[in-house]
Image 1: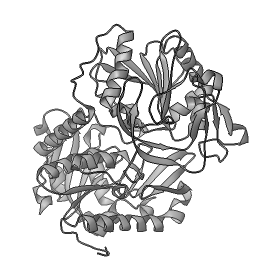
Image 2 (image 1 turned 180 degrees about the vertical axis):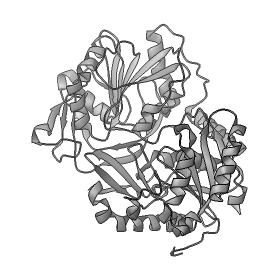
Image 3 (image 1 turned 30 degrees about the horizontal axis):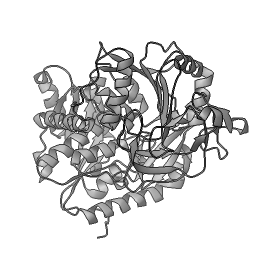
Image 4 (image 1 turned 90 degrees about the horizontal axis):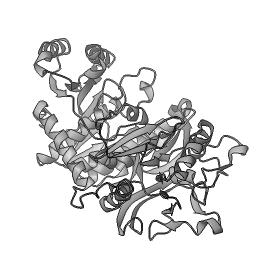
Length: 509
């Protein structure tokens, strides 16, 4: 089957566009995916191009945005990089790594992206659509747009909004966030900037994140429908969702909902933080409060610290040193603190970081070899090729259990100091996936390359129990609901709330 312009699939695709970034496109797509799955349809998520450092790795080792992986889970299917054929991973200084169909193929500046990558990018989007429909001819694509579809300075190189909508003749929903204010101007302004053939594709409007009595917006709904001649198909109330944010800006806006925690966790907010969905299982633990650490401070109030993944490990390690956070972390460790580093965080906990090919944020030759925090005797060298793969292993510490997750990193890490390395032990039976060291005075320092480590319920529970024991707290109930069951429950609740307030029937003909 060859996809041509104006190709019409068997089941008409639904595309969710937004009046702005953060309007709620991702969660709307997630909800629709689960609603359609429950109705017996075959939904498949799709986002032609995403810009995010919050990534996932499919079973072929391909990188994709975590939000599309989550949407695939909502569909009850296995995520594939075809669902997000272009992933741009920001590296700072207006540059991004370019990933096509899961594989890193280069870097680009924002200025040169249209000139160098537009044509191959559109080709890879069409290739992915063709493959999806060949394998699933009766599926209904649920497509997510990016940002606003009418950024006039960018629209000529927009690969993932109206170009995809017109290509598939999709039924489009325009989502707007009333919480941010200006909802009428957002809707009218977005529609006015569309060409007539583009505006015709908008078949419904969703007002998202409405607080209070929904009936109070009835006059506003009528005004919008009279002005646009497009039905308002849903007014979605404010939901206390527990989903990972799309990017690090949204991350800072997450509200603290638990004020009397038994355990406080501090996560270092690195400038180039990546894969912050790693901590979603901790967000869903009722006894744990997470706080983000962005500047030098006394860390003794935290029961354990996490150094997250980084897209620019050298750059972020220099930030830690210059900000004083490296010293804070060392002092915390010396005072019986517990620390976990994940991926880039593991690398920074070591003694030495070498970047001979300028792959991890070093800017000049003096930064090609720098010191790490020095809490684990590990040396990391960054090579040109990235490692991306799913992981099935078995942990040794803090318990024996089956471990699933994925690796996505540059760099090879090895023990650096034979004498000090005698204190360091492997966390897993696969010896190069992580190490830990128990301090003489109490506390531990651990690091792993496995993203998703906290999704492993036995491992997470046993690590938390180590912390609880040090605080003389009772151990966790071993029959607690697994994180993946909690995630399914959250998706179901999200879909149920949307289903109550969303009229989708006309989109399913």
